[in-house]
Image (cartoon, rainbow, N blue to C red):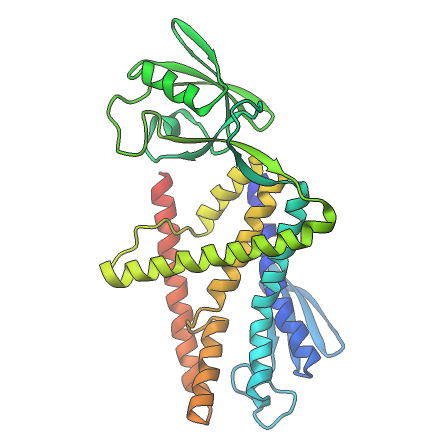
Length: 355
C-alpha cells in the first residue's frame, strides 16, 4: 500500500511539474491559460484567480493545463496560443520537457549527496553481497527473493557458510545442485530465512538459482559538488534512454518485434517497490530516471504528445502556412487513441509477466 501511494505521488509530481512548465511559459508570454487542474475530472472544487481557473479533480494522477487557442480557436486574438509566432509556441510546448529534465537534475543532485549506488570490487571491505537481478521462473523467484536482498549466510545439511563474496555464493550453490539449501537474507531491516533448490539444468546465463549478484555501496558527493554530479547523472540518463529507444526502434523495424523489457504502470510499481526497499538514495535515482523517460518520450514526434505538436510547427514552417486546425486535431485524436491502446497492451504484458 505504501509503494502504491508513493507511485501515485511520484507520477502526479512528474506530470504536474511538466504541466507547470507549459503553464508558466504561457503566462510569461502573455498567452491566456484557462485552467490548471490538479488530478483529472470529474471536478471536485475550483476557484478563479487572476483569470485562471484552478481546479481540484477526483482522480489524483497528475494534472492538466488548458491553454486558450491550443486547438486552433481565437486565431485573431493576441491572447490565443495559435496566434503567436512559431518560436513562442515551441517555447510553450518544450517547457514541460525542460521542467522534467530540471526535476530529474534536482533528484539526481539530492541523491548524490545521500549516496549514488556503486558496485564495489573490493572483496575485503565488508560490503554484503546483494541480489541485483532475478530471472523469471527461477528458483530465486519461486522462493521469494527480491532485488536488493543481501545474502548473509547459506546453509545445507552438512555445512554453514558466512557469505563474504559473490564467489562464495556461486561455489556453495554449485556444490548443492538439486538439493535444498537455506539462505539467510537481509531484506530492508528484516532478516529472513528462505529455502531454495538450485537447478541442475538451467537456461544459459541464468545460473542454478537465477540471480545476478554484486556488492553495492553508496558513493556520497559533498553538497557543493552535488549540482555538478547531478548534471553528469542527468546526461548519462539521457544518453541511456535515447540509446535504449533507438535500439527498440531499430529492432522493431528490422525484425518486426521488440524483445526488450518495456514496462507500464504495473512495471513501474514493482520497480518502485524494489528501489524503495534499497533506501531513499536508490528511490531518488529511480524517480529521476522516470522524469528523464517522461521528458524524452513526450518529445517524440507522435501526435497527441508535445513532440507531435512540435512536428506540426515544423510542417508549418516548411509549408509557409498552418495545417488546418480540424485536420491537426483529428490526427492528435488518433494519436491519443493509439497511445491509450499501447498503454493497455504494455500493462497487459506486465500483468501476464508477473502471473
